[in-house]
Image (cartoon, rainbow, N blue to C red; front, side, top):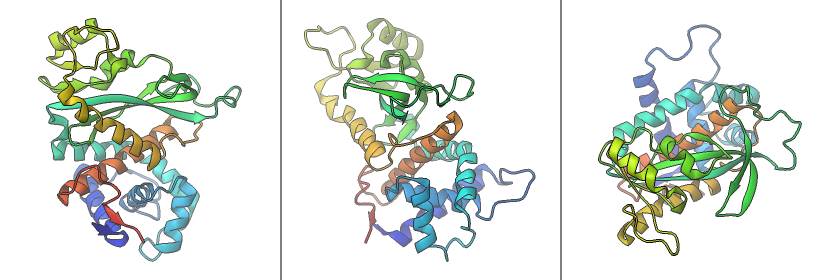
Length: 304
């Protein structure tokens, strides 16, 4: 278990190593460099996410109060938030590099799910030009979450995890289509021979047969009440493994606040989404290095 200071150092060293391997010449070709290095900015973001600081302002104020001596370039909140937004593709790259290094992408069993990602209150989106169709990243829409009987305005967060709980794929998806219409996007890049696990929302016998024939991928699901075995029934022995994704979704919602992002542009949403995915992945990575349960985030840092 880390104390808070050693956790910051561990995150910084991991981000520095990954950043310099991926971007040995940096990511800027011209212009005045920011007062904080990209590695410092990402470290502040990841640690702030772990500490459950919900807003960018709260993260800035916490580090300005407690760790300004560690980050002397931490001078302006607006510039820091802009820097975070501009680093969303760097966040993606570091996340995927950690997935590759850990071997999680090759897990023989991978679990898929979606969760609602509201971007504003359902009653307030009309006329506000929030994530319009010409946004270029993704368009927000009204969606429905059956498990919560909830209508919302936003997108769906797609999640695919390895059997150790590490997130290996996390596309942002349109909110309106049913989960079964997003299955192919969720399974993209899954190695041949993998067993995929999903909930009842992914039952679609014809599509499941096509995935097996085309991609050598068996997607198994529980049966709906009254259904007979149709060839892709998930055995009860795999139920605890499938439920891992419920733990991951709960962490993303409760610790990383993915359902509390209030944005107007798709690229801003992408920046915050992948920052939170990277933060979750870093926590899993550090737990693995400590030989601790990968999803035991509460036991990762002793916060006084």
